[in-house]
Image (cartoon, rainbow, N blue to C red):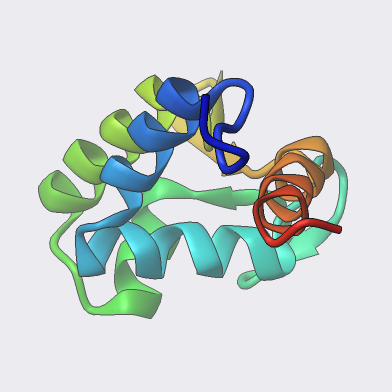
Length: 108
């Protein structure tokens, strides 16, 4: 067994596959940098909404929705409907898990 074998590697591989698309990576980084539950983001709303996210990144709303679906299925992004709006955010626990993955991969 290799010393580089990492627990949960398949789960992280699915996350990295979702992040391999430049638009999805941009969306994830945007959300990770500013949009936590209850924190103002972008237009001053709590979290950020799909429409606002697309405007800020120059991506059509339908394309943003597709990419968010992929990120959500990979467990990277949370979404919640509030009336007609869908709010999106990245939990700090996910960022911590990604950091731990990389720290573990390099041996410490």
